[in-house]
Image 1 (cartoon, rainbow, N blue to C red):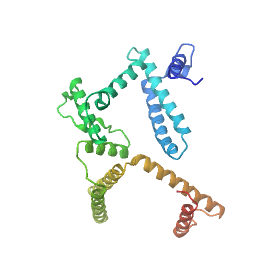
Image 2 (tube, rainbow, N blue to C red):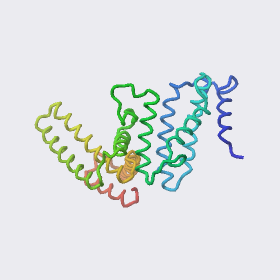
Image 3 (cartoon, rainbow, N blue to C red):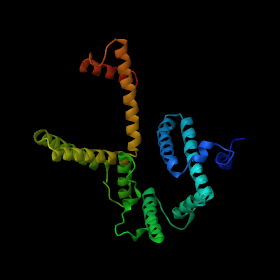
Image 4 (cartoon, rainbow, N blue to C red):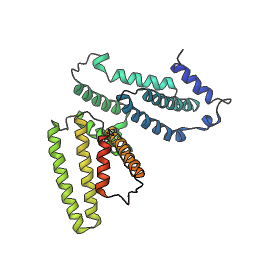
Length: 275
C-alpha cells in the first residue's frame, strides 16, 4: 500500500525523536532554509522534464519539496509555534476565501477577473491584519526582492497587469523592445567614448531594461522566463560539450581552432539535434 501523507508526518516525527537520526535532530529553521530553496529549484527544473514526457523526476522532486514542508512543520511543533495541521488549515481556508466565485456568490467569468479579485482580497486581508500600517504599501510588496531577477521581473509585471497596467497586445511590447535596443546601442556608443563609471552604469541600466521588456513578451506569451532561460542554458551546455568532444577527436584545443571552425561545429551540433 502506498505511503500516505500521515505516514510521512509519522516518519518525520520518528526521525526527530531521541531514538531517531542525529542529523535530523540537529536541524532548525536556519539550517533548513538552503535546502528548502534548493529543493524548490530542483522541482522547478523538473517541470521541464515533465513537459517533455518524463514526469517521474517531477514526482520525485515534489516529494523532496513536500518533505521540507513537513520538516519545517515538525520543528515548529517542537517549538510550540504551529503544526502541519495549522499549515494545511491555513492554506485551505485561504483558498476557500479567495475563491468566492467557486465557494460563494461572486461571479467571475474569466481568469482576468479572478486575478483582479484575488489582489483585492489580499489587500483586504492585509488591512484586516494591520499589515498596512506602514506609510508606503504597494501591490508589489508581495514580490520578493530576493527572487532571481528574471522571476522577480515576471512576477512584478504580472502583479501590475492584474490591475490593468499592461500592454494591450504583444506587438506593443516589441515596439518597447526595439526602443530599448536602440537606447542600449546609444549607451554602448557613449561608453566607448567616455569610458567612465557613469557611462558604464547607463549600459547596465539599459541592459536591465532590455531584459525586462523581453520578460514581458514571455509573460504575454504565457512562457515562464526563468524556465525558458534554463532551457536555453541546457541547450548551450549540450552544444558546447559537442564542440569540446569534436575538438578532442581532432586532437585540437580551443586556442588552435579558428572562430570559423568553432561556428562550423556549433552548426553541426544544431543539425545533430542538440536543440
